[in-house]
Length: 473
Ligand code: SF4
Ligand code: SF4
Image 1 (cartoon, rainbow, N blue to C red):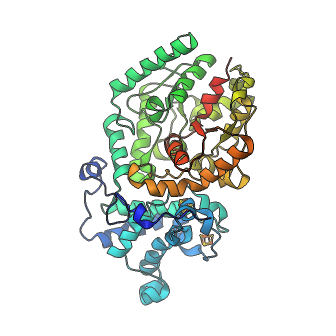
Image 2 (image 1 turned 90 degrees about the vertical axis):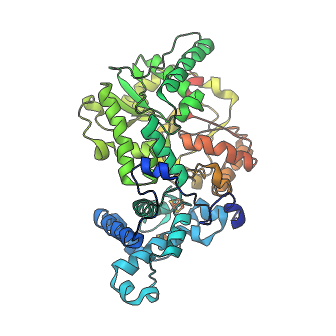
Image 3 (image 1 turned 45 degrees about the vertical axis):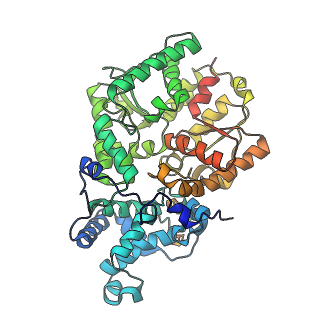
């Protein structure tokens, strides 16, 4: 049943563009984009669109192929949550398709709106700003489309065109700007990052009675971990777990103050910035002379990470076995899970928690990480329970805050978009008394607690490896 949030609530704290919060001039400048709507923006936008159509054959196919069957209609959590017909994936995509038809097809050029085409004008731009920033690029709709049309790619193209003409959204652009200034999404300066790592050493020594290192900028370590920066400042159990796992396995590791962030908000904005953010991680790995560049618990970080060889490769300076992106979970499970088995886990230690797993959209639908986290969860928890099958694995629902929407300025939209996930979680809470939810994503870890609390679902959010380490003897 649609959980309808009145549009008045959606626009609360927002500009006239229905919750699109314009980027700050300084942030647009910092990320090398026009700082305001450029002159001849229609012309320049259409030229960029033409460039994208040439570059990405898939985009042209997505523009031409939709038969409007409606199979994707109720796949989108923002449509389910808001009831706004413009949030149906097919309707969202039509905002780009109408412009495509107008400028790139003969019927559209000759017949205009009679051929379902529309000018790229101010009214259309206002709709783009609103509805392409009410999409979390989660790809759920693509799973239901008989043609595999991926509205996330369509959203990315629209955001790319808007970036070109000087239209950005505040949250996404300020995060990318912070990465260039400090190395991470939260804007934590290097000395503060180091201090926090020292605090972790003290805390873990107090809790576990042994010295565990959280090294920073260590040249020659075996592994450079690029965790989400939120793990260092908010998800302390996950950060503790990285150190405990590497220590237990006798593997030297480090983080980098140049790239202390696996997250890549360029993915939510444009290709140029996605590439620049990604290049920082590879540069850090090169400078620190590590053998393995490894991604930690963050969903969109991993989605950006898997393209590393295309964006910033070749990674031929790494160990020959690791010249491709690798996630911590994959590494733990390599060679018949030899590293996982070496961790000496007693899963009965976690018998005091009934727990479920939330697939972040990006690992599940864009990062091929579906079974690995389940192996880990089953390895360390006896009371592990899945949410309903139409809401897990490739059918997972977004937390409501992905795709660059994790900002307090649009809470009503996030509450609405998170409702399908909250419902699934409530189901498993009632059926199996689940009180914990594990998820390997910093955005989900930040977005889900407030969303679950809003929908009165009494479930606490944790990382995956938090539970693994909790069960280590
Ligand atoms: S399911 Fe695919 S073909 Fe059908 S309306 Fe949606 S995008 Fe178009
Ligand atoms: S990618 Fe996700 S958020 Fe965007 S339209 Fe599809 S289902 Fe909705």
